[in-house]
Image 1 (cartoon, helix red, strand yellow):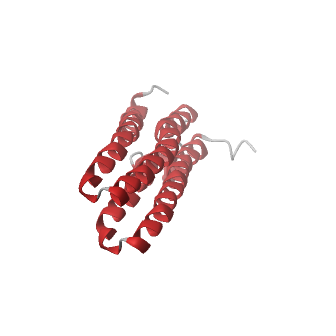
Image 2 (image 1 turned 90 degrees about the vertical axis):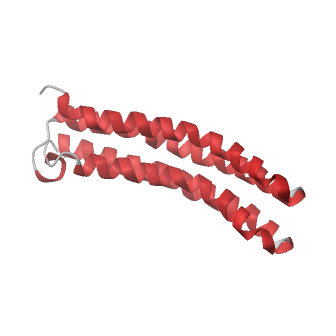
Length: 161
């Protein structure tokens, strides 16, 4: 059991969490907006481009999580190919948490705003960008969480062993 509980496994767990939760939220979000968008497109297929933008917005959090997962796995060669100190593994795990948690929830909340933006598009197509801007505002918090995770990942090497 002690061979399983190492700094390396904690770091890999962090990478898995950083990727999994935001991707799960993005999949939910893109799906929610896609369902609403499909309904709109049955009536107004000419709005496909605008629907696609509103549907794609909640997908960015998954990309942010993937970026942090890759950083955790590849910034420090000890993660996959050595013996990572337990404190560094724990730090990578904690570095994953901001984007994992905020990424999941912001994707779902952004999808809800995107669905509302689709309502704007359905009723007044010339005002559709207002819905995109509103959905984009939710993105701000995912970007802030990404920034904290990135800065934390790059700070792990400075933690004394």
